[in-house]
Amino acid sequence: MMDVSSDLMGSGIPFLDYRKYSERIFFPGHRESPLRRDLDVPACRRATVEQGLVQLSNLLNSKLFLTKFIHTLEAQRTFSPRDRAYVASLLTVALHGKLEYFTDILKTLLSHLVEQYTTKNPKLMLR
Image: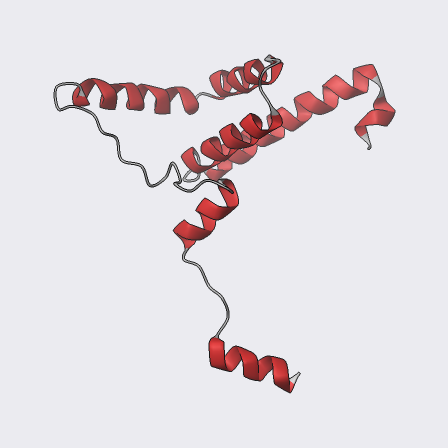
């Protein structure tokens, strides 16, 4: 125990700031995180892009839209598990400031998943 504690005193506990930690957790294997990218938009289109981002934010804050959007993406055959993880990470970061709403969305999606498996084969749900 003394050896371990003396090692920690000398070098310290490895620590990452929150931004770098979240980038590594949500976007593993990416050299440049989408969180660090700036929008390179010409000045003439900036107002239109900002308005579009506000409208996208409003849509993401609609529970009906977001659940339908996720179900539609999951129904696509070309939507790989890696794509699912990437979209889930983007949505998590986008809704990070509204964790109560985000938790409600997750509960709703989980209940839809439970309903789907209980109608097919209930034993598969418990795997």
